[in-house]
Image 1 (cartoon, rainbow, N blue to C red):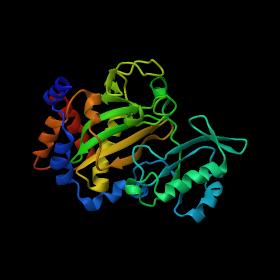
Image 2: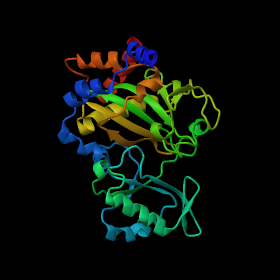
Image 3: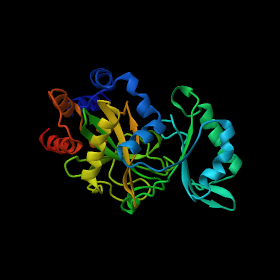
Image 4: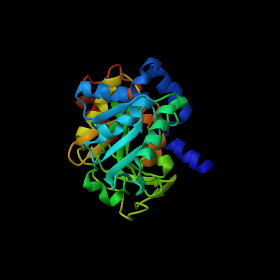
Length: 314
């Protein structure tokens, strides 16, 4: 363990205390947190700014409104139910179709209408929300993943997490669902994290359950040297989210829909640090360089280009 920690330090890995003290506390105003902690507010901000997000079919705010669910999903065979204040992928139900008047969950189970209503009731009670506060349930478009990910993903939709500092992307990884993660793109639940070279959009290497891996644990396909589609557009999109909410240190999660292209899924004011492990490289040098800039480029495109330049130089 000591050797691992020593290697991480040499690799410029930022620890949680430094992240909190030097970046989150200094650059993230507390008053702005609700803009990202509430996924409904984030979605509405993004729509107003012209940033693509999964379409919102409806919002259930109180118990009485649960009965409106059939009307909300009436014209949609598939959809996603998620808590507005959830985290870590908890409380998200992905419905991939309907069979014999039952909703087909992406884990293969069939849910009655009462099952789904019970789940939404739990969301409203705050079971999945940050701090256990009463919550809202969002009903939205189910992203159809780009088929290019088919060989390195199990059931769910991979997402691309990018840490953005002062509007400049610092590190990225693609999170690949597995059987263990139940199709969710969350590393703590068993998804694979693969680092991405910012300059090229190619995956470098990957980790699963804190261990380096070269093949996806379920499909057996090689994960490294995989070209992320729409890479330059995706990087500029992550940079643009800095202006959307004004947080200096930010995590941006984007998914690639096979028909709609990049869609912003959610933002995070306290992104985790496992992105460094996935990349096999710390963020310290780039964060320090950006911190010392008197000003950062005005446009999102310029900031994305600077990120690619720093990836080569630092």
